[in-house]
Length: 184
Image 1 (cartoon, rainbow, N blue to C red):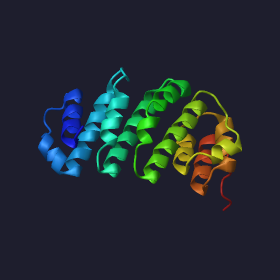
Image 2 (image 1 turned 180 degrees about the vertical axis):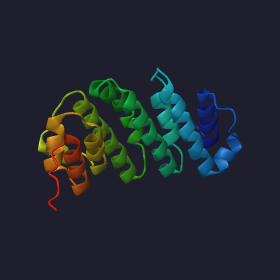
Image 3 (image 1 turned 120 degrees about the horizontal axis):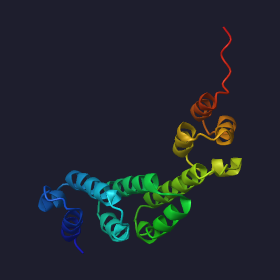
């Protein structure tokens, strides 16, 4: 389990042959780009059985910022394909032990928050209308995503009244059609 063997295995497993392993090991930018390609290939697969091992290899990288970024991309792509919160919860639970091995606490927390954000999004997409307290527990980024994507009048009303920023509240008001025209 060296960086060289991890990078070589990740590239081979993804069928990526045009990246020189030695170059990737020597240059964290080349490696980060390779990781992005690896997770893109993995996310496009129907099978999820290799994801935990792949994430473990990526997160062993000494450049935690680059590896965290690749895992965020994987989380985002898998959440976009998930059929609902239960499927995403089960899949992401398998990654939690690997995420827990990150040395940098902020990166661990960021990945945990991203998972929670996607679970919130998927539950809203599945018809759940959150309470204001639930809304307060998701990031501004996810509140904006939900404000931009939700078609639920109840969810948009909640965001219009309780969104964490003026921008989020205005997006929700505009999308709900409840924004009052300005007086001239």
